[in-house]
Image (cartoon, rainbow, N blue to C red; front, top):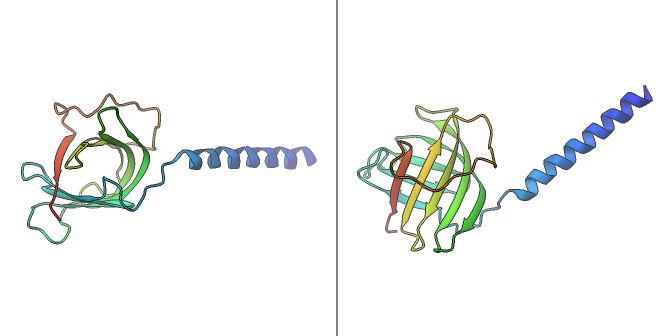
Length: 153
C-alpha cells in the first residue's frame, strides 16, 4: 500500500513538473502584438480577418460588420524576429464557429517588417500542438497559404 501511494505521489509530482515546464516556454502576448489587427484582401476567402488577444474572427466580405465566417481561439506559442526584421508567430488554435467548428489547427504567420503584410500557412486538423513541427517559412504555392494587408484604422 505504501509503495503504491509513494509511486502515485512521484508520478503526480513528475507530471506537475512537466506541465509547468511547458507553461514556462509558452509566449505571453503583449496587448499591442503586431498580429492583433484587422487584415483584408478582396482576393482571399474570407476577405477580412481580425486577430485579437486570444482569438480571431473572419468576415466573408470586406463590408461585413458582423462575423459571417469562422471564429475561434488562438494561442501564440512562440514569437521571434528574423534577421530581415520580419516577425514570426507559431500559433495553435481551435475553430469555435463556422464550417470548421471544433477543428484544431496550427499556423505559421509572418508579419512583414513594415507591419503591413500578414502571410500564413495553416495545417488542420491537428490533435495537439507540436512544437517540433518546423516550418521553412510561408510558401505562396501551398493551398493553405494566405496573404492579408493591414487595414487602415
